[in-house]
Length: 416
Image 1: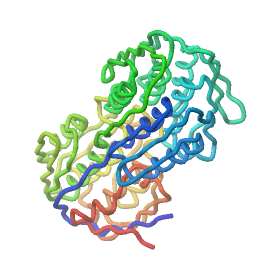
Image 2: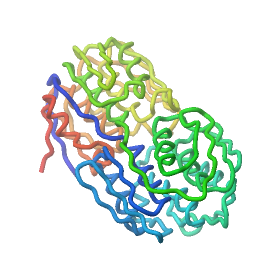
Image 3: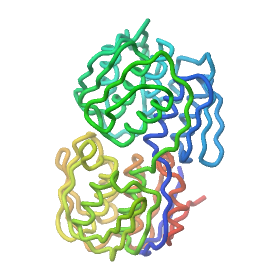
Image 4: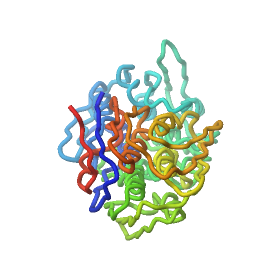
């Protein structure tokens, strides 16, 4: 258990560098399995999920070199076909090796995935799509077995625009015979990253960023080199931190379009934001109005930022209503915010947040990754000292969180 101490009510001022996108790089690492040779990925964050994926790739026989922010993946002519339970249970994104291995080898054995316990995130969409492509699938003893003599292109209608299913099916279909169309596809920026990387590898994919993606299967792929986009959730977390704590903070590099839904809401709350080509500056007095939020698939408001804005709304003037439509258990941090003096009432997937004049420091426990970020943000804005107890969730998704906040004046440190 790692303990983080935060002395709150310190205005933030300065520059925060934004790392590469966690939810893109993990999928590109999986995609590299599809071609023998060395693929290179730049702007890779130093987070636990990346190291877990490295361990998983090593079990499949991949040679890995990771220096500074560049990841080199040497994929052999012969690779393994099993993703073991001891690694997959740590990180849900491990399921993303299923499409690449099925497409390249025609068979794969993957443990049912783990990760943050934030509610149902079924992989049924993945499996249904693989079956439509021609795979035979069975589940035994906690593992999924998939096998296909040959995958064939087909029209796939997703019941929900699942990001993981869209990416997994894109990768499998890239080596299928014929043309696959994925309808009701997820539109997140990370989907475009997967398309771009696969196309650099020789795939023929178009439509990422829209709700219909067309994949013309090819015989084989080759290694590629790619630089990952900035992490929009990390950028959004620091935007909210600056708004809550007050001061003037500039984020760079960022793609403002990727956080446009958050920027609009922060402006609605009365926060001054300056947007340039690849940077965003927040000017805040730590005084803001209550606004309502509802999570939706991209380009709607991201579910991964809902806990952070809830922390912000605990200090807003007025009452806000926050509704979660993506995951069923996104509010596990509410009891911890209440320990700090927040006034939050839960009803099914909605939370009614009545702003209070101030939060007070307390000892709180991190239940999952984004909830942990919310508790850190609450500590930055609270009176007194907050102790955040975290068993590794924050390190899964934030590269040098403490150091970056210290760099803009926060009094935050890890305790021995």
